[in-house]
Length: 309
Length: 246
Image (cartoon, rainbow over all chains, first blue to last red; front, side):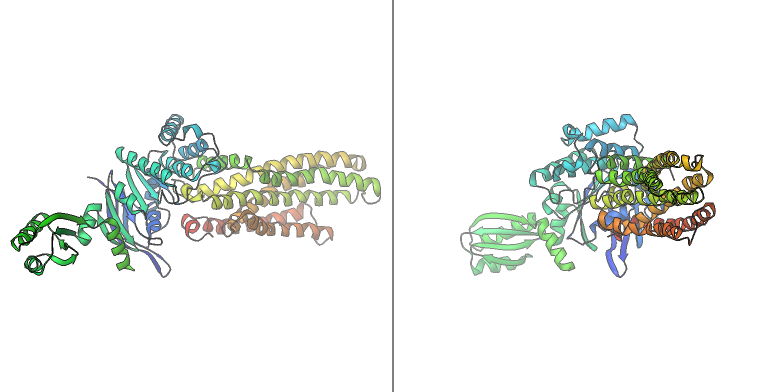
C-alpha cells in the first residue's frame, strides 16, 4: 500500500512553546486517518504544516513523496490536497456556485471540469438547488458542506479536514460524516482532525492520539486492546473464597468482585476465559454468564490524555 | 508570479465589492467632490470677487486644486483595501485561499489590483470631468483652456499611481493589525494626512505645487512606496497571516 502522508519527528515551536513534538506517523492511500486530541493539542498546527501553510521547526514530512518545507514542493503539495479549515472561510457575499467556481479556476480546472465537478459535488451534498444563494445566507451545516465542496472542487488526492463536524447540529454532522464515508468509497485519503471520539471510531481506519506528542497510533480496535486490554465479567450464582482462590492460581490479572460477578483482565480471552470457567466449576461454582468487555476508545483517549497532562 | 492568478483574485474581489454599498460610497464621493465642487467654487469665487481670480494667480490656484486628485487617489483605495483584507480576516476566508497553489505574491498582487484599479478608474474619470469643468469656468478669464497640460499629465500619470500604490500597501500593513474594517480605516486615514499637509503648505506658500514641486513629491512617494512594498511583502506571508495577524 502506498504511503501518502509521512512524518518523522515533526516538530513545531512558537518561541519557547512546543506546539507539536516529534510526531511520527504514516497514512496510507485511501485511508481515513483521525487525529484525536484535546483543544490546543497541536492538531491544527500539524495539519497546517502538512498543508504547507506554516513552516516546521524540525523533523521531516512528505506528502505523496513531496517534502514539506521545500518551496517548489510546497506548491505541488498544495495542488494535490484540499483543505477544510476549522472555520469554513467562505466568501459570504458570493453565491455557492461562485465560491466553488473561483476555486476551480485557481486550480486550473477547465470550464467543463468546473461545471461538472460543481454539479456533481453540490448534488451529492444536496446543495445544487441552492447554488445561486449567497453563502452568507446559508445555515451553519450548509456552510460546512459548501466548505467541503470547495476543498474537493479540483479532485484532490488528499483531503485535510479540521474539525468538520464541530458546532454542527446532529443532522448536519451526520450528513458531513456520511459524505466522508462516501469519499472513502471513492478511495480518497482523508486526514481528519477531531475531538469527537464516536466520529473517529465510526469513520477512521487509523487513529492517532495527540497531545503535543503523539501518544498512540493504530486502528480503533488496536488502540482499545493495546492500551488497556480486555476485561471478562463472569456472573455466578454465588461468589465464595474457594472460587476466588481457584481463580488466583491462574494467570488472570486484577481479579475483583462485584456482587455475584467476578471481574478480571485478560490478554487472550479465548484461552483464559475457558480456564477460568473450568476452575470455577471445579471449585463448585455455577456459571450463569460470561461476558468479554473491551475498553472503549473513549477510555483509551482519556487515559492517554490524562497521563500526558 | 502569474498575473492571471492575481487577476482571478481581483475579479472575485470586484464581485464581492458589487454587494458592498459602503465601498461604492467611498469610491465615488471623492471624485464627485473634486469634479463638481472645484469648478463650482471657481465659478462662485469669480462672480463674488473679481480681484481674487486673476490671470496671474489662476494657474497656481488650478495646480493646487489639481493636487486634490492625488489626495483623492490616496484616499479611495483605503476603504477598498481595508475591506478586501480585513473583510477576509473577519470571514476567515484567507486560510482556504492560502491553502491553494497560489504564491503569497500572487495573492497580494490580486488584492492590490482589486483596490488599485477602481481607484485609478474613478480618479481618472473624475479628473476628466474636473478638467472640462475648470476649463469651462476659467476660459473666459484666461482666454485659453488651462487643462490638459504637461504638469497635469505628470500628476495623473505619475503622482496618482504612486499615491494609489502607497495607499494600497499601507492598507495591507494596517489590515494585518486591525480586527475590523472601521479600525483599519481609521489607521489608514493617517496616510493621506501628509498629502493634505502638502496642499496646505502650498496655500501658505511654503512649497509650490508646480512641475518642480510635483517632481520632488514623486521622488518622496517613490521612496515611500519602495519602503512600504518591503514591509508589506514581509507582513503578507502565509505563516505571518495565520499565526501573527490578530
